[in-house]
Image 1 (tube, rainbow, N blue to C red):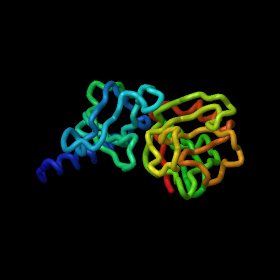
Image 2 (image 1 turned 120 degrees about the horizontal axis):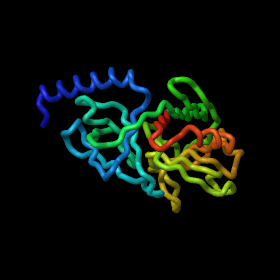
Image 3 (image 1 turned 90 degrees about the vertical axis):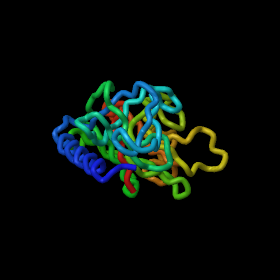
Image 4 (image 1 turned 180 degrees about the horizontal axis):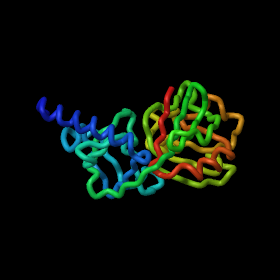
Length: 224
């Protein structure tokens, strides 16, 4: 059990880290070298999830988005990946390779819209297909885990960006995995409608632009 003084120290450290983050060159990304426990508090508390070294389906190296840091950058608060509970916890950042990105993706489900910003400036805006009423797109903070090419005629279009979330409400008999993604489609009429099993569908034109902007680790924030 944490003492009141320990909790106060953690709160102070987080506040300091948030002030430092406002001066950072963008979102902090860290390369995960090995499967890492995500804990409730910086360096303490129970394990609430795990950060893998490689993505779930395509085994691509994980670069995780650090929402904020504590204890002088020793610990990082990260979204817990591949879980139905949308929360964040803390990992030890010591020894991890750090990079930054100024790019951020925001998806507005009510507007069927994806907006990409770079250092706070809008650089791209696309219409997107979203989850159906029966299989809605889960909201939350995610990051890009995969960059995968497909044949253009596939149901994913020519490219997909896997993200760190999953769909807990898949249709009965669904067998192609539960990972969320931003991808193309062989059904352009579905773009702008609520018809998918949770993924965000965009046009080939949008994919061409996104491939230039989105790296593994890029923050993806999905809101209602």
